[in-house]
Amino acid sequence: MPRCRLWCRLKWWFCCCCCCCTDSGDTFPAQKMNANSILVIVSQTRRLLTNFLSFFQLFAFSTEARLSMQVVPRSFLMASSSNSNSYRELEDGDDGEEDDRQSLLLLSWNSTTIHLAEFATLPFLFLQLPQIILNARNLIAGNYEALSAVQWMGQLTSLLGNLSLLSYFAGRRERGAMAVQAVGVLTTLVVLIQLGIAGAMPSLALAGTVIAVAFGLLLNLLNYLLLLREWLWKIWEAVISVGGATVLLQVMWSTFEPHIPHTILPAVITGIATLTLVAMDAIGFLPQKWSDFLVALSAWTATLLFMWTPVAQMFQNFIDPENIKGLSPLTILLAMIGNGLLVPRALFTRDLMWFTGAAWGTLFQGWGLLLTLWIARALSGTVFGTVTGLLTTWLGYVMQKDSTAYALKCSLCPLLELCLGKRMPI
Image (cartoon, rainbow, N blue to C red):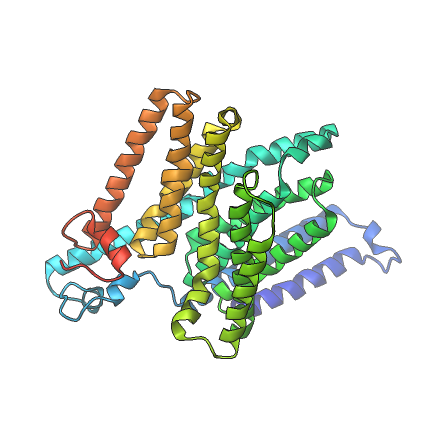
């Protein structure tokens, strides 16, 4: 057994260290380490690490086997019994070659969408790296005032959104989407720590953020490994639901504050309403429909929060066209690529919330902002035309592959299934 072998190796390593260090009963054995002793310790340490990794891989494999991975879209579970090409029949094994071929197409596209979602981590990772590097340079140079240009409230809002979506995808066992949100949480936290060092963020707010992030990441990891108590997870969901709904309405109100009076009334009203729903759900007074709505509330509020970001930016571009010069086309393009790589998986799993956020990020946060740059002549027509053509080709390819995997009649049927929540006739 790897565990017994690991324990024996650990005891053997400890004995080797003691024997090598104690030579002729010296009072200070650590000073009499010869070359052979060092080689023995290094060798035993290498073997100890090898056995530790083997034990960890075995634990990860057994944990993965216990996970109820939902690799099959929910639309197949909603298929009617009259549908002869439902996934259940394909899974049970039909002798027909056509069914076997269709099953292989389905599993192949499922695997492809998983890898695309995992690969989306890279574009989102590079989104914050330029800001992190610039902040580090300013900190080293002692130019703390430059970091005050970064609004810590906006960064904190983004972090809370990533944390909420991480909890949602952890519950659905979507590793690729989890990785994307975890990267967003960690990179934004690094930026906030830099702002705290420069004094651009209150120390108390930074300390609370670090504690909340550490606690949230731990809970999500334990929930993904099925090692978390259900009641503790429900408390966490209630907290992020109330926080997400409160922040969303306040951010939307703040966007138009130069033209409307400043107030925190939207946040107060939304917070009280959401807290009331959570309390009613806890004591069992909430209908099942509202209870299900409350579970998805945190994810939807985080999605709407990210969807609001390009709307606010477009509004600022319309009010102040000079603001466009401060936008980076490369950053916008990276956001479009990252969201575009998430679209196939969101469509395949028939997750309306996920698809809405990914498609909106691709078309508005990405292509829409590039369109405003092109209109303001801040982006060449050749670049914008190339990006438009590639994006159109990619979305058409995704629709065609998804309809083929599901054996649907047309390329628009996946969108109809997504919106209607039921299988289309084949």
